[in-house]
Image (cartoon, rainbow, N blue to C red; front, side):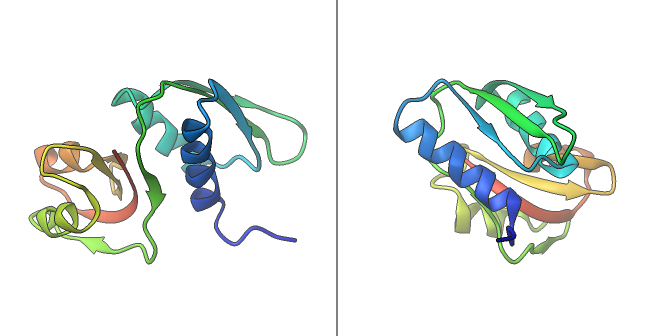
Length: 130
């Protein structure tokens, strides 16, 4: 059976492991986009570390959890956001104004919505975490 959305499956797995208080988990299949999302989560201290393990197929990510995630989901459909349109999606997906972050794919790479606002660029919403 094929996965229809591996990013969504990975983020739901992270949330489920946080609920049962696991310290790390393995996720396959790995992808570059998932690696970029994990990097944004690491920079913003939602996870401790992650590692890509090549297994000869699609790869595996080993993620060490920090225990700070309450909710972590992929955004479907991937809405297009203009450089001044992040507030609407903050109200929709995040519980309060300064709590959590939206993960956005831009022309400069995957970053948090706060970095995209600072750089004055828009993009497509990938996920949210708080």
